[in-house]
Length: 173
Image (cartoon, rainbow, N blue to C red; front, side, top):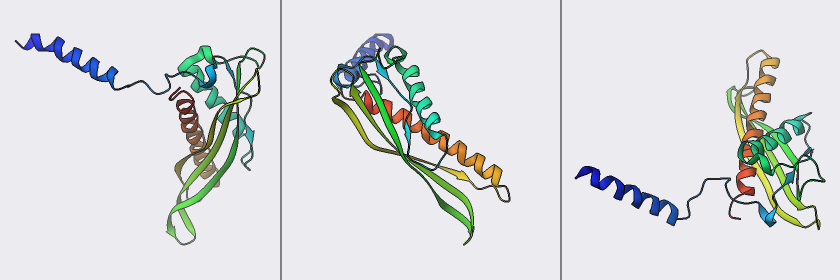
């Protein structure tokens, strides 16, 4: 009797999952029918030197991880360009041991992206300002360790923004 219900429950689960429109994040198509996307170096409008490489590389990695075939090797082989700007990176104290001694800080980054057709220059998609943040500890008496913690927090924010951007880019199209 128990084994008879297993196929019925499995079938019912499959019907429910597919009927409600469930799909994996990032599994949709790209806007405007784009199939090959080129990603140039992002513009850095922050005072953080070199973050444009990290943010661009994380965005490219998301394409490789999710749909490598969609990543164009050059502008000439692409039907759309995904360009963008690192609008800001800010740091704020979030906890203190004294009024003048921070023990934890938070880095917040804002990224803006745009997908443009290479055939007619039309904007196919724009992200608006995407924002992520990450806390890090202030190493007491060690500026180098604190700077390393900040760098790791920026790397994590960059990774989160790349994931969010890819998911938004492929959602509901």
